[in-house]
Amino acid sequence: MSDFDLTDPEPQSDAELVFEGALRPQSLGEFVGQTKVRGQLELLLRAAALQGRTADHILLAGPPGLGKTTLAMIVAHESQKPLRMSSGPAIQHAGDLAAVLSSLVPGEVLFIDEIHRMARSAEEMLYLAMEDFRIDIMVGKGQGATSVPLDLAPFTLVGATTRSGLLPNPLRDRFGFTAHLEFYDAPELEQVLQRAARMLNFPIDDNALAEIAGRCRGTPRIANRLLRRVRDYVLVHRADADMASVRAALNLYDVDELGLDRLDRAVMEILLTRFGGGPVGLNTLAVSVGEEAETVESVVEPFLVRIGLITRTPRGRMATPEAFAHFGVAYTQGSLLPDVL
Ligand code: ADP
Image (cartoon, rainbow, N blue to C red; front, side, top):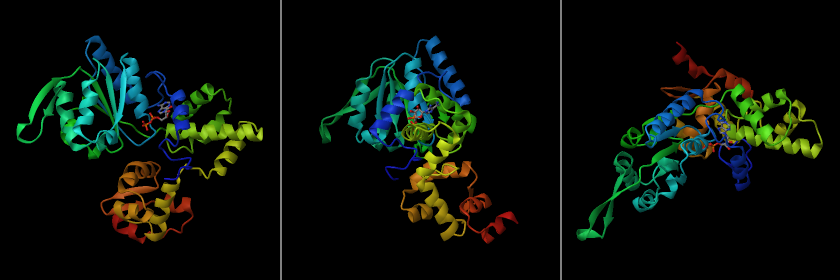
């Protein structure tokens, strides 16, 4: 995705990471939405605290920008334990993981982002570590190699993934709790925005906030980013922080009323025009827009399905009549008929 795509759900710059850090909720009480997951996590953490043990390992699954890193930080904060941050791509060898695991202090929370991208050899080491707080370290090479057991301090692993389907079963089974984070609905996004506006000291109309909430792809990261652009607009144009400013700022950055980003639009346009609305396979769609199938499946498709522009059928992805209407393409979906009949 482009560096300047306002609706890219991934963080775009170091400055944004700093900004995000400042707005990140610190406790479960401050964390907006995901009510069910919040309740479940709260129970899990309280039970562990009452029994004086480390909390169960936690897997957080869902598209980028929905709060997985934030929740990992909250788990550490609420259990008053230090947090160690790592990521799947940084763990290329079992040795990388051994180095992290062997230096954990008792009770530490280990966050591994994009855990599905960790090296296979490290995954196997993690099984034993998660289950028994123990690893086997290979010493020496070839015939003379021996494995030396090493006890670890008890820890809580918080894994995050945008692709829980890619995790091998033995790994998935070792998490005591798995949370699937969902896109946020409009009232929840308005709460995220109200909180951010308060923290940024930026008074803004409620209906202007509602307009931003409707255009942020169900994603708090994008909500906060759009708010920042609106704040810039108001500052530069000495305008009121109202609906007109929101519309002007977001139009300037090409964020449409549904908040679709460039890649969402590319996928929809190809599906509607080149494939007549489908059905078409995910890989074909991904190749046509020059993107990895993984990104289309884990980032683009869940949102397009959620807002009703795409349906998944056994024969492939299909555009809905609403999609034809939104993109102003004449409805030509003869191929819908066999499913309807
Ligand atoms: P992920 O790890 O899933 O990509 P993050 O946890 O980094 O997402 O969240 C991105 C930003 O969105 C954070 O800076 C945080 O401020 C904000 N955010 C995410 N979830 C929430 C929430 N439930 N309430 C308030 N802000 C949130």
